[in-house]
Length: 79
Image 1 (tube, rainbow, N blue to C red):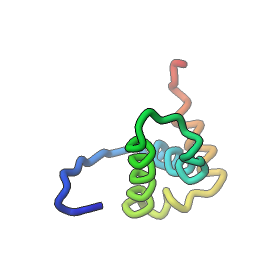
Image 2: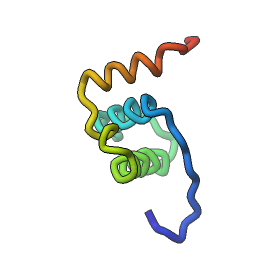
Image 3: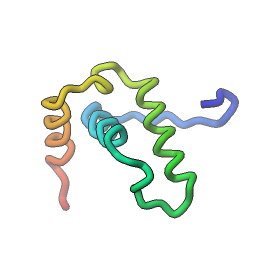
C-alpha cells in the first residue's frame, strides 16, 4: 500500500477477521462474481493487509479456531 494514498481504519471483531482471512485465503478470486476488476483487486488488497497487519493469532488460526469463529459470527444472524 502506498503511504501517500488516503486510508481508513476498520476495527473488526477477532472472529470476523478470522472468518474473512480464512475465506480470502481459500477462495479463488477469479470465481468471485464482480462487476468491475477493482472489486477483485480490493479483495486481494484486503487479504494482503490482513496478512500484514493482523495478529498472528488470526493468520495462524487452527481449523478448530476457524470453526469456533464461524459459529460465533453466525450466532446472531437473522437470516
